[in-house]
Amino acid sequence: MTEAVIRVAGLGKSYETAAGLFPALKGVDLAIYPGEYIAIMGPSGSGKSTFMNLLGCLDTPSSGDYFLAGENVARMETDALARLRNRTLGFVFQGFNLLPRMSLQDNVALPLVYAGVDKHTRRERARELLDKVGLGKYAESLPNRISGGQQQRVAIARALVNKPRLILADEPTGNLDSHTSEEIMRLFGELNAEGITIVLVTHEADIAAHCKRQVRFRDGQLVSDLLTEAAV
Ligand code: ADP
Image (cartoon, rainbow, N blue to C red):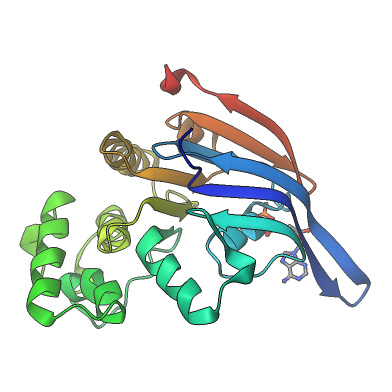
């Protein structure tokens, strides 16, 4: 059987608050396989961001196990975990998170700087990805010269630059109008068709309808896990 890209078992996270420990995630089991396109849904406060932060290794669980590309994340040293994270995961955020004083090309190339890739290769690879998302001609522009939808395309190009197996996207259309959201979802659909696994948080049903599988959280628990019509 194919190995899961992500496997969590009994995953729990409690936050310390003035009122005591607050259990935001209560023992979640989930496996995500290569090529999946999955929406994480649920009302505000249900634990979606907490779950995504754990999947992105941005936070550590209070209980349970997390295997990323077969590796037990809890047992890894910080450097090894950073390397695994850089080569396995690409991140896309609601607010695009581009650096305002850097050209689009330099924004896209930034993860390659951390990966120790030489300047020439960085530039070529960034250009290639800007072309892929249809923005090659703006390579030298600053982020404030393009629209929000275009900025999100640049952020997706940046997420792809290390050739990750998996993209984690947290409300990627949350700041976009519905037409632009559809365009971004079409781009995710194309990337998934090329074999990239995508995990996307959304609370909008029409956005989640683009995904092939939908899991739903409520009060820190996974309450449903369904394939959609897009899966057939
Ligand atoms: P969602 O993304 O579905 O809106 P979150 O994962 O952000 O949900 O939050 C789940 C619950 O955990 C909420 O009740 C929230 O108030 C609480 N929570 C999130 N982060 C913290 C934190 N750092 N400290 C205390 N409570 C938190």
